[in-house]
Length: 252
Image 1: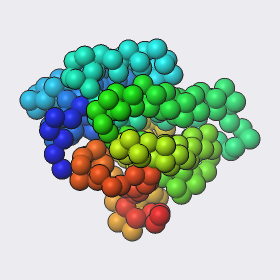
Image 2: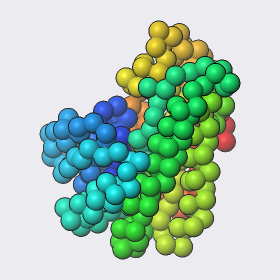
Image 3: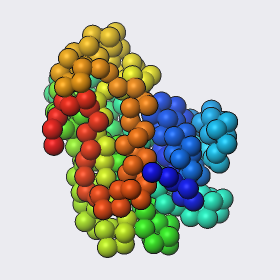
């Protein structure tokens, strides 16, 4: 599952899962553009420490002009774009609660980033994939959508929209040899998950693991193999799919 000669954009790549995807894909041979609201210097350093190529940019994915610029810079630096990993999302900073108690402004922000922002990333990257004669878009969904996570309806709804977006785009882009798939992980032991769950973190992870066929919590290393598979030519006839990486919680 080599990525030699390929170029990938990874959003939400300053830390956590996004950083893990960027480093692993670089190790597989891809040149990386790491995008995040915050500085991506740590990710650039981690990739370069492995002998890879990486540039980092501070970009808000709700800013279409900034995304267009980042995509153009990626082409100028590395020659094109083959892979987009849509990982950026509002998660850790969201407040949970009953559906009728959620803050409408937070609902709108969640949809603006997790759905519209992802769509805009596709708008920025796909034209460059068309120039390359194909590519792979990997949208990070969530167990929240496939299982139906309560008390976080804004997040659950946004990730269900990601799955719908994945299927619709796969239909639109298949003839151009651009594959679009989603990955739906269970809760991963990252700082974002700790922030989202707050003082219920340890108990929540225990409950989540107990509902899995493989009763262990995921860490970032448990997801990178699936992302590299979807990015590589090993999955060249896989599109429109949502792959659950959740220890066997939901069987799709």
